[in-house]
Amino acid sequence: MSTTDNQALPTQPSLMTSLMAGFDAVTNHLELILFPIILDLFLWFGPHLRLKELVVEFTNQIGNLSGLDTPEVSNALQLNRELWLLVADRLNMFSALRAYPVGIPSLMASRQPLEAPLVQPVGWEVSSVEGAAVWWFILSVMGLVVGALFFVLVAQASLHGKIHWQIAIGQWPRSSLQVILLTLFIGILMLAISIPGSCLITALTLTGLPVSQISLLLFGAVALWVLFPFLFSAHGIFTYQHKMWTSVRQGARVVRMTLPKTSLLFLSIVVISEGLDTLWRVPAENSWMSLIGVTGHAFVSTSLLAASFIYYRDATRWVQRLIQQSLMVESKKLRERIT
Image (tube, rainbow, N blue to C red; front, side, top):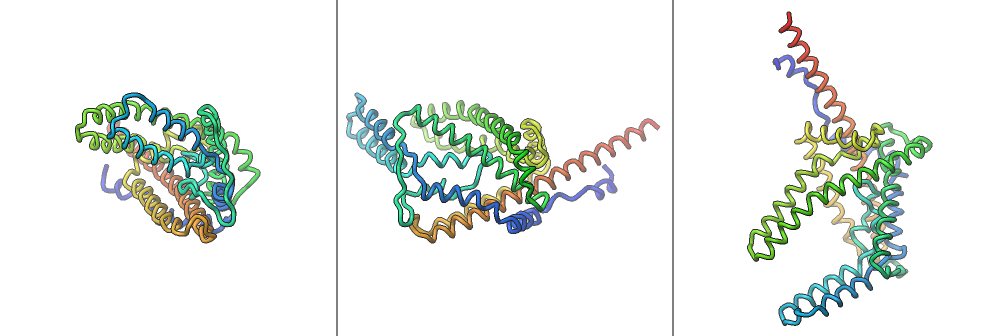
């Protein structure tokens, strides 16, 4: 390609412009942050769906197995049992409402609070493994469906500068279906990655070789490398109303052709989100000051999502212009050869 062609190349979308535009969009539509605030308040003050009885029964059965009565094994089992019980005390299955890859952001889903100001949340125990699976499935689907509506509204606010509830409600069922299909696709992909990787790590761990830790890091790097192109897999569903597979392919192409800047975008999102989450978690879970953290997290996470939509739209336009320009150059060269 000639120097003139290089000079005519369009510029890539600005990372800082996208972030600022995302925060501006949410500032102009603060009603969007009600979605994560309501979810966090429910997880904080609402009933907790717990698995403690199942965990206690499971740990007791493990402890009663024959051949595990040596002091070393007993001490290890006791430590594991305490860790499992500590997790079970905080585990709230309603946190599955914070679904992935499309869902409503939540601070309390990761914090798993045990207490709330003035009240003690009611605990509901799940009595069977089958019941836990059913609850997890129902709550996950609910989280995906409500999350789809949230994504539709954030996409409207960030890309069009206004929210049209009637249009959003009309797009909601189709978007929800595509999101569920996308979740199944990503789940199958992760399963295909995790099964051979977990078998390899388990085999190396049983040998007692120190390479097991290295293999774990290597497995994480491979999983990240495989899944990174799918970071924008859901954005096409809400930006251009694509079907699931079209959105996945379009998102992967955008990531591949804008890899350095897209990597910087998501690194910035992770740093901003996780850094501020540390601040939001400073107040005690039974303090009303945590409301500040809930509100701040809702605003920041929604703004970062809006910024990702703006960047995705601009990056898609840049990729399309680049492809069109490349086709024009190749067509020009072909005509020159013919003549």
